[in-house]
Length: 129
Image 1 (tube, helix red, strand yellow):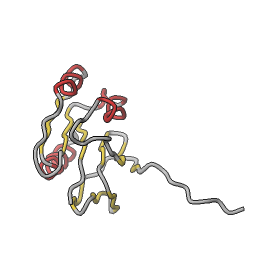
Image 2 (cartoon, helix red, strand yellow; image 1 turned 90 degrees about the vertical axis):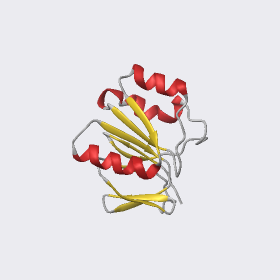
Image 3 (cartoon, rainbow, N blue to C red; image 1 turned 135 degrees about the vertical axis):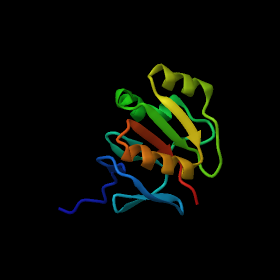
Image 4 (cartoon, rainbow, N blue to C red; image 1 turned 60 degrees about the horizontal axis):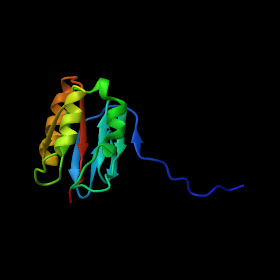
């Protein structure tokens, strides 16, 4: 019996540098993903916060589950810098995570360098057109 189309959550199991970004998505591990991504020690996940301008702890639930494996969180906020809400910065600090918002381009470059140095880095990256 034929099955219908199965939609799965976007996930790449492992750490990989970001090869390119723009045009609404990212390239990594010789694959592409349209939309925003969350790069964690356990893999790269599709990530779409409900409101890019008002991030909440719920938007980072998967990161919080892996907090013990992360020392630095880079938040690529698109084409321009958008500060993180104070409550989020405080929560990350309580968990021992340094959080740094920056443009998506700067976050991608910094993520790749820290990943190459085998640092405990994570990145939340908004897609850009």
